[in-house]
Image (cartoon, rainbow, N blue to C red; front, side):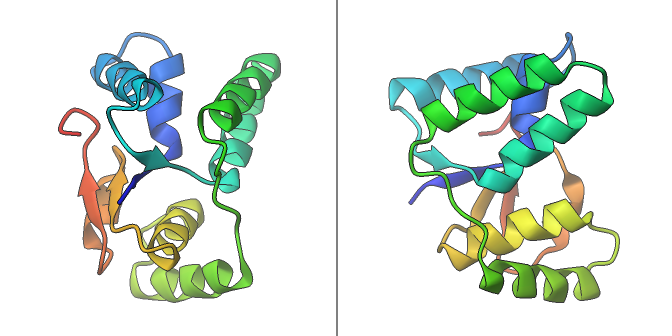
Length: 136
């Protein structure tokens, strides 16, 4: 069963030096080498575009989105069921970001229970096991 990679894994890997950068780069190398079964969603790529555009680095964000799409040919789509479940998650966990809730819903609806993320708010979501990138 694959793990779901949250957008912050890609953001840290592509970003400046930080405590999470090396672990995220290593994680993506393991995925590329076939040593770790992982997936992500089209919403994660949209989030990458949004974050990098907001930071004035749109071209870098678009390039990163393309690399992610190449790395994960079976990107998960967002469905009506994901939107509905993310609303339920948000109502139960209002501290969680709407995108975090959507990532959790998408993972769960696809039978994925492990999310690799630095977002500690995911620890509270029933049915999800969050792995910090340094522990993955």
